[in-house]
Length: 254
Image (cartoon, rainbow, N blue to C red; front, side, top):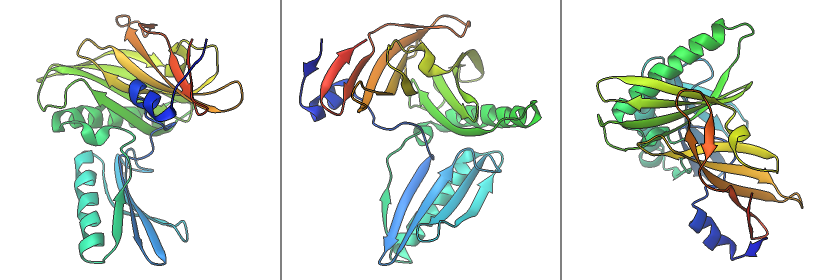
């Protein structure tokens, strides 16, 4: 059965973020008449752990201004410096794009965990046969506080698919508890899901996953489901139905 509501109210009720995949950690769109530029922190970068780049909209040319191989916070600091220079010195008007990968919301201690895992995985990607490429990261934490015990969910995207690591952060040390392959395959749905992104994690490790799928009439649909990892097995179980909404404004359960 489908129940019809006003579209904005349902998006607020479900807490659904409408996007299909993380892109960059921080991004600004800066404009003056006749010129638009995109200032970005890319984690990972094309050749480094993180890269601060400027892309010129008119030509598509991308220039790397700074990079780091050990500390992604360096790139975050540099892009804010660059943003201020564009606005205050060069009179651009800059708009902040929505946060899509959650990395900038992590505390400093959580960023260190992400950096260590990402560096290790990038090295593994290059030494594997065949090699693979890590194309993006989605990160959420159960607490926003620095040096506090909690859980992290680090969802890594590669040219082969995605996998999610659940990390137990004990403040003084941390442990990867389990790895979940292909998050979309664990969502309860009779309809093909094009993406499933980790949106939140509790201290107990329960995940809130946001999905994108195609409706029967080829409309875009967005959903959410609560999933719980079952120990270290890499298996997760549904705790709620998969609720979704299509652009036509219909709410469904699967």
